[in-house]
Image 1: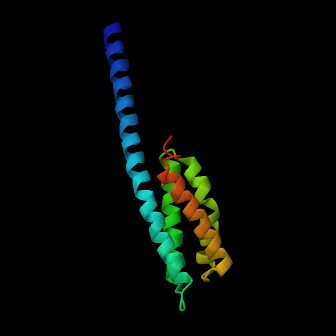
Image 2: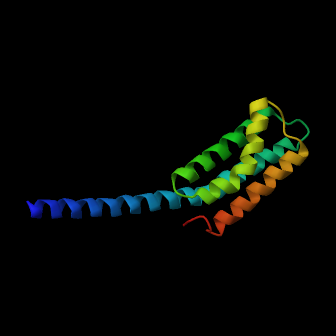
Image 3: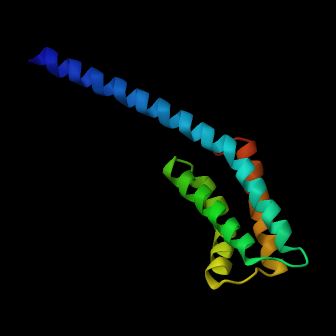
Length: 127
């Protein structure tokens, strides 16, 4: 009986290591993709600064930031979730109200996204 328990514990330990390795791999893929997602959001913010901004642009920024923030939290990068939070809050407020952000709000979102993107590129969120 003891042998069976020892085998089960070893099996569980190996499964745990495999799961942790897989999670680390998924987190790495996610973090490598995040700068590109931030670039998409920045391009959309540029459209909002244009002559005829469309509400769909802020809705898409909101969706991108929501996906990044939620995935970061799920995959063990809560610092990234916190870093994106100010930009996400502005995007959520604007998208929820169906309004175009002011130039000040757009600049604030851009600043938070740029800083978050650079932090990810510097790999400070890979812990």
